[in-house]
Image (cartoon, rainbow, N blue to C red; front, side, top):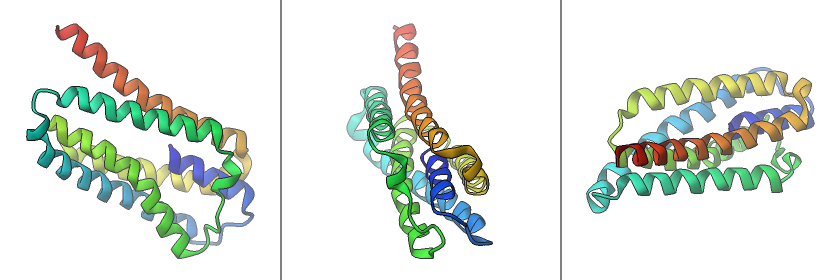
Length: 173
């Protein structure tokens, strides 16, 4: 959702997105989520033996921290500060790396829990790519308030995933 919010903000305030940039940004943002998600998955698999027995608690903590961070950014940082010249390739690459950091943490959780990562990362690639295309193409119509609400929704979804894990843990006890 951060990528979607960023795409909307850039389309709303930066003016014209040049032809082909939406596709380039969508591919870059989706690819960074895929690569960083897999990197996190492999790191999580390597670290899993060190947290054996507490992997679920660690995963809950990671998702809660990520959700709170995203919520904090969405409510405290104005979407206008996320506007860059999206028409420049170096800006797209830098934003891709920055957005991929969240995918790295989610990948760690997948690695800790030994969840099938290929399906999750492919789905993430396609969703991030789609929402980036949609945000850059229609962001000027959706507006900054919508961009902020989308970012808030992203944080809420991370926290909801953590709470679902807590509920599952309680029900198994």
